[in-house]
Length: 419
Image (cartoon, rainbow, N blue to C red):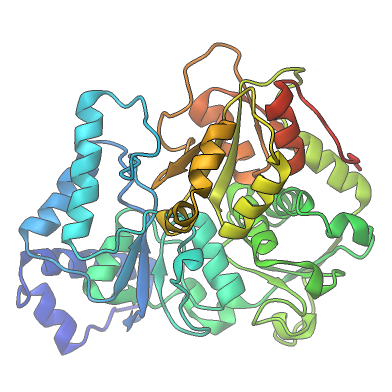
């Protein structure tokens, strides 16, 4: 299929708006050709994952766009970087890497991006309207944007995300097209006890299981009362599913905007497959999130995706007036940090032994201490998936309350039924 460019798009490619804009539009147009897209479509916003340092080339790419006087044409929030620019926490990046990471973050600000530095921009007020086309990076943000907000985006990776933001365009293919958002698989949870589905600890497990069952297909979840699911539950489910599978969109009947019922999500078609989830499948999925058996822990990490203010409320209630004996790393965005600082809440958490991490998280940059045979406990399905490979720590999965109890004693404490 031949890509049709508008006169405006051709003018930008030919340098009308400068070398940086021309480079960005060329990248978007060439991607559209590779994907077989017939045209480019305007986007309402972007979320940029490419500002996380993985090597010097990424810094040079961003600085090349700055040198070409490029600027984003739409609202563009920034995902986590490699540094905590708020000064809450430090990391172990060597001097050269730290300097290059900072240069990269600064370059993206010069391009006109917002210094949000969060993997949960939807918690920081970036919530595009249902049905609008956007270009978002970061797997959990993408799946939340598509599924919970009902906006339309593909999984835009580094550095296509910033190119789309500068061009103000995205290729017209994939999940931008309504027919490609149709569910083809029904995932039935009706065999699960409602008491289980009402626990926050269940949704990362279910998301991890869903991702492994679904892969890159689109499913509609049935058999759960929609009022049971908070936005934090949906966040955790989507993040885990995008980590264990390649999920970019899910539907939950009666809860997500494109699924007032299962039939709507299926767009009138019969499902290609129906998966009935059993309690045994959930028990095995929960067990699989732990990569090690241990009695003691060296650290706890929560906040992938970044903790909401409500989750900090829960953390404070769980700690109460106690002090932790091992560090608990609580990763969040600076939009939440501002709220915590209003009433000295962060100070009290830090006095209890919490290390608040802003602008980044412990699995994308070296914050956790180097330690042989180290054990990390988490309530995050995404942390559980990535931490062993990214940090070298073995992982034990538990609820938030179990994480806190274990952090208080330094020993693994399971306080809830393990199903």
